[in-house]
Image (cartoon, rainbow over all chains, first blue to last red; front, side, top):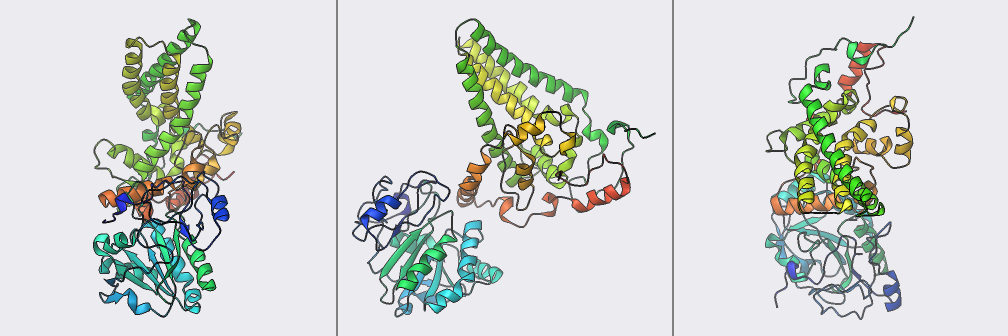
Amino acid sequence: MAFTPATACCKPSLVLAPRASSRGSAARAQAALLCTPSTSAFRGLRAPASAAPAPRWRRSAASTGIVCGKVSKGSVPPNFTLKDQNGKPVSLNKFKGKPVVVYFYPADETPGCTKQACAFRDSYEKFKKAGAEVIGISGDDAASHKAFAQKYRLPFTLLSDEGNRVRKEWGVPADLFGTLPGRQTYVLDKQGVVQYIYNNQFQPEKHIGETLKILQSL
Amino acid sequence: MYTLTPRCHLQPVRRSPPPSLSVPSRADRDELRSTWPQRAWTLAGTAAILSSLSTSASLVAAGSSSPAEPLAAALAAYSLADLATGVYHWFVDNYGDASTPVFGAQITAFQGHHRHPYTITFREPCNNLHALARGAALALTPVDAALSAAGSTSAAAHAFVGAFAACVVLSQQFHAWAHEKRRRLPPGVEALQSAGVLVSRAQHAAHHSQPYNTNYCIVSGMWNGLLDRYKVFEALEMVVYFRTGIRPRSWDETDASWKEDTGAENAAAATAGNDGLLQTAGISSD
């Protein structure tokens, strides 16, 4: 069945905590999950490894932080070939043998995405030290990516996901009742298996810290 | 012998506006004084509000309602008015321009205010409030009439609409006080600002710092913390962007025509010498 962001498993809510999937105990996940606003309402949470990825709607916060969609923890995401900011085709398979951080973001030159890109840039050395590659993906075209990368001196690859095809294939959930492309980051290990997924639309800088933590344990 | 010269008796300081900007570099003194049409609209708006509130009071006096309901409704209206002013302020600060239908004049006014924030403290009351009072007169009167015509005996409904309109109209006065120097505030206003009943000068000063994307509410400012913490306006901006492709002004480097004109005001202070009535800072620092 085709998956579209509009029918994503999430029933997005501004104050719902972000979804994350990684190793962790069910009890910790239950305790960590919150649906009520707090001073840091958007937190990366860990769901149990056994959480079933099948449901396509967002359950109440009392249940697990299930990451719905086709790509989930432990799965090997489908390969893609997309154009980078220089118009060159880049395949995900090319990065096998090293960890990869693939982050999907809404659009170039928007406040959150700029903060996120600059945060990845500022921590890029740490990612390199961990032997990882960073790839940003949005629906913008190569020209937009090139301008964005040049303006903010981004050292990593930005890929154009025209028509949001890869976003849909991977099952990146949309936010705010499907009106906003979701902001979700995947950490793939050397074998190309997803080890961590982090989702947080409105605290984009947190993606960097959360993914670095996981990389250091891979 | 030293005497204070009333503001209105001072000679206006004339200077030519910078050619690159469509907004005048500084309002002439005459533009800050109340005109008779402005007084008339302010009176009309005030009358509509008082009529609504007195209808509510008379219903309570007639025994059809306890005082608690209209009081609760008035409090709810006070809260909602703060949110409403924030949403409206966010909208005119970020979208449209002078040519926008209906809102063009307001957008220009807000643009001018961003350029010269302190000018609002020079405006005479009716000059400051007449636009909102006109809105109240035109909108509240039929609503109140409809409530009465529907045979409504709800004191709370009249209290709600009356209080909402009052807070929205007075928001511009609260806004002016949020720009005023502490020593010039009427008695009790500073205490109300400190208590969070009226929007505080510190909170509103944060709105006048680049990129001008926080603290939009100007009645009590009670919603500012929540709206900013949960990035509600940023979320709305993203939705508008993805739906329409329109970027809000706050996303990009602030255009010169929206930035505070500190240079002109500093020069004015130097020219005015000991004239303490020509203020230089957009927000008072004391």
